[in-house]
Image 1 (cartoon, rainbow, N blue to C red):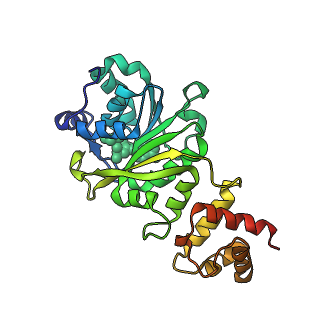
Image 2: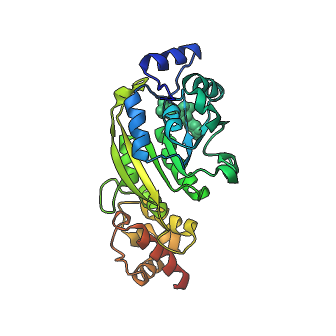
Image 3: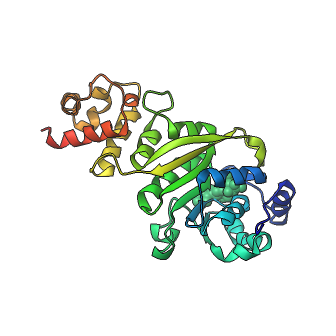
Length: 287
Ligand code: SAM
């Protein structure tokens, strides 16, 4: 094949050459298992018509597997040492595909949308192995700002995977699940052992796959998300009191909820994203 994937010895060797000290803050745990990266690319359904946006390529394990299947890859890495080295690693392990890679040294949470790829290279798929502390904000930000993204797969800490894909009424359901559902069908797509990483993290990981759909309502997203945030800020409270601040008073919150057809004594964790949208819309007409 045109690509030589990285095994344990190569990941360790590259890390040593770069005198890398992986930091917890940036969630630097690198995959050293070819089967895992192949499985990620396959589960993501990446094909030659995809322009893949990879956030956090690190040493390049997943990047190489992506290049083997994708039309092009844009890799955004915050660590300048890793970003600088990535092209050389790809030139060594996949020389014929090196031209298909564009590396950007930057923070996925701060870069402008245009830096993720111009109109000629608009990303169609997001694939990333993300640190737990940025996983949800990165995915939500990219879905919001890059309408060209049609599908994707992220590898995150197992608990974050459960939260992102949780259904209303379940223990893990919260703001991340409700907001993700605004943009996409989100589903769990398997577990990944902590042992495929170097250094070995404290927890296992999980895969989350998503496919974009039309938003459930023709409504300003930020207004709907404000209701979601208010509802989950105090998730043990009834919606009537959790939304009091947002609505101006508990009395008005109750009237808005009734107008939306929602029981004011219900809790946020019972509402799906379409129902949150109904609440936001009902507030428009409730004096
Ligand atoms: N994709 C590689 C792999 O699977 O082996 C590395 C995954 S590692 C869990 C996460 C990577 O994301 C690290 O290389 C880290 O430096 C990078 N990173 C962390 N925060 C980032 C951010 N805000 N923007 C871009 N990259 C980030």
